[in-house]
Image 1 (cartoon, rainbow, N blue to C red):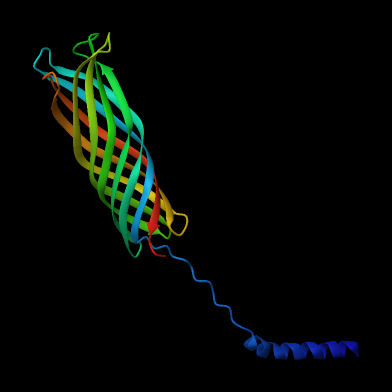
Image 2: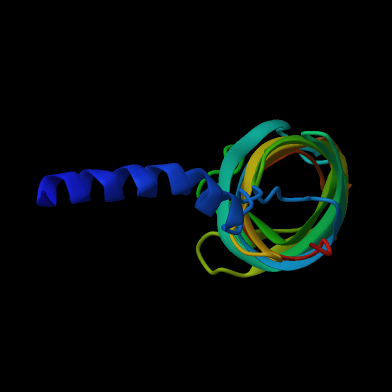
Length: 233
C-alpha cells in the first residue's frame, strides 16, 4: 500500500515538473569580457642599454686608422606615453619614450698605446614611432618602427695621469625597429616588455683639440614598461 502511494506521488511530481520549471526565473549565461586596447596611456619604465662603439682616428696627427672598440652598458629609467586604436584583433599605435641614466665604456688607444685611453658616455636616449600589434583579448603582441636618438659624451685622457686631453659631445639620431608584448592585468593597468635596436651609423666628430674621430655605433634597448591606460572600459 505504501509502495503504491509513493509511486503515485512520484508520478504527480514528474508531471508537475514542467510547470514548475516554467515558473522558475531563468538566469542569463555570463557574457565574456573582451579587453579594448583603444585609448591613451602614460607610464614609466626601467631599461638596460647596450652599445658597441668603434673609434677611428682621422688626423691631423699621424698615424691614423682604427683606434679601438668599446662596449657600453648601463641602466636607465624614464617615461613613455602613447595612443592605441583597435580594429578587430589588430591594434595600431604611436608611442614616445625618454630615458636618463649612465652607460660608460673605455678602451686603450690602439694608435697611441700606453699614452692615451678613449672613453664614451651615454646619458640620455629617446624613441619615437609606431607599432602594429595583434591582440588576444588582454594580451598584445606587437612590432615597432620609428626613430631613436642618443646623447653622447666622449673624452680622451692620459693613461698614466688621468688628465683629460680632449672632449666632444653630440646628439645622434637613426632609424629604429623592435618588438614586444603587453599584458593588461587590470582594468586600466598594463605591463609590457620590449626590445628595440637603433641604427645610429657613423659620424665624424671634431674634438676640442681639433683631432677628428669617426665613431660608429648602434644601440640595443631592453625595457619593461608599466602603463596606466585611459581606455574607458
